[in-house]
Image (tube, rainbow, N blue to C red; front, side, top):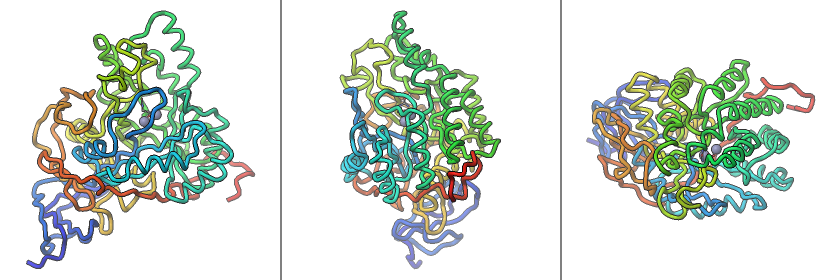
Amino acid sequence: MREDFDLVIRSAEVVTATDRYLADIGVVNGQINAIAKGLSGGRKEIDAKGRLVTPGGIDSHCHLDQPMSDGSKMVDDFLSGTRSAACGGTTTVIPFACQFKGQSLQDAVDDYHKRAGKLASIDYAFHLIVSDPTPQVLKEELPRLVEKGYTSFKVYMTYDDMKLNDRQILNLLALARREGAMTMIHAENADCIAWLTDQLLEAGMTSPIYHAHSRPMLIEREATHRAIALAELVDVPILVVHVSGREAVDQIRAAQSLGLKIYGETCPQYLMLTADDLGLDGFEGAKCICSPPPRDKANQEIIWRALDNGTFQVFSSDHAPFAFEGPTGKKVRGEGAAFNEVPNGIPGLETRMSLLMSHGVLNGRIDLHNFVALTSTNAAKLYGLFPKKGTIAVGSDADLVVWDLDTPRTIQNSALHHNVDYTPYEGIKVQAWPAITLSRGVVVWQDGVYLGNPGHGQFLACERPVPAKVRGRGHRSPLWKE
Ligand code: URP
Ligand code: ZN
Ligand code: ZN
């Protein structure tokens, strides 16, 4: 047979966010070159008969090797982070280049490129975290960075070293509007958290469970409402990240039903964990400290429903790799430190796709095409990577997952490929796991073996994701000169 392709994936059941059909996929130079039945030969062939093949996952909210200001250290860099991602079916990561107050954004980006450069085994883009929106940042640095492909940024309404006030957020939203960038918002009310934290500490309530009591859902609801109002005032889309339960879901859904372009993201921890997990014996609960905190079973159901009914567009891990043991992870202030001294965040890069496929699709909670949209396609669209990433189409990168849906497994940290010494999902059963992951046509994970190469991953400059035509549903102002 003529060998027209570098690789042919034979007899795949191709699944995208919209379609499902049987075909061979021919790959040349890392891109999908042909999709048809009966393609000619490839120098390499993969038999996918009887297997679903989906676009590789895009984890558009994960933290890798992000410098911290409290003495803690993330244990996953771009080597272990992208390895772990690939083994779990993710082929693109979008972590954060984080600006410290007083630092230039460009410096943060340069530093982050050095961290990723030769280590990444899958492709990556960067969101920016803007914690110091000086006139210089707003007028010069950010427009220049958007032009160069850093087209999304995260804004924090909480955390002392990151939080912005409403006026600063408005300035950034106005810039996002002008530049066509996407703003991600961490919506929790900082003053309410600080006040509640002080009360809890004074009352001697310091163990990990009180993290959840310091951040009840209403403070997420208030901040989500405010973020939406600010976005409406500026007439620009935003994406509310890591939404935990009903009250924030209601805010987002109400805004969407008014026609506002408000997008939502949720994460595995809000489906799989509850606040009770923070109450585990001793300091164990610190393993599940993240913000917003996991809620309860009823809220897990609300999150499932919001994934199913289109309220959420994105399902990402919010992987924040702090070790449990050792002096720079969850115990950075010692075992038994008060909840507010524990680094926030939990690992989840490798388990994200399997958990949603197993507990969402195979359990009948969400549709398979929605799974693809939530784990890949929508992130590609919202962050300016589509159609290079996020779909299976001629011309797209051959970032693919061949699924094994028939092997029951139990999640165990010892089988994962991150550097974190625990997974909050230990013991959870899953039926689906990627049999093969391909990054631009190169097999990076097959039959339980990691085959990736550091340096294979390329930086992705993102397009501007918010064209003027998606605006216009918010507040009308004579200031908006289109
Ligand atoms: O607790 C969390 N979510 N940690 C990671 C940082 C963030 O806010 O996303
Ligand atoms: Zn956040
Ligand atoms: Zn995060």
